[in-house]
Length: 228
Image: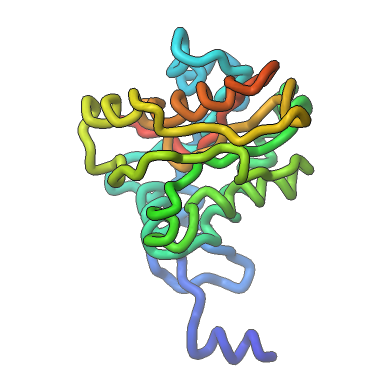
């Protein structure tokens, strides 16, 4: 009853289009969900996300869930997640994407899910890491531990979306990330997660940091992939 009263004064709206949600809908409406362009990377091991890391980072697999287009529904979802505090978007995408990830044979060998970390200053400014709820949702659904302590961002940098390609590569060519590991972390398969895969430079830098751990293997999962 309390929830019904709460919904009367604060009705739930779609994060994608701001229309009222039906009782059966969660986070986004059915119409918006049907407009989301899926990548289907989980069906193709040699997909475009995997190819992003050819010759740069040895990955077991790399997949993204949906395509990110400017002014599209996915951009609206990610923007609300990243800048407006709608962390439930990450949970919803994690719930949906988990079904696809179960198809990948190597997902069964993953030992821990690792989010791309924010610098402590950036996390304090934003109040949260936008991929935390996504990671925790994957962890719950796939029954894989979530670890946000092992990978550390050492350098504070401004928002990547405001940088051009050259600027992003320059920032990430420095030692932005490091790892804090013990012997129990050796020989593990880490699933590195992020929100949007663009150039792949940040994920490459994170992956190289994780590969400092003896015997480590890396795979990559992102909510979305930038697509022209």
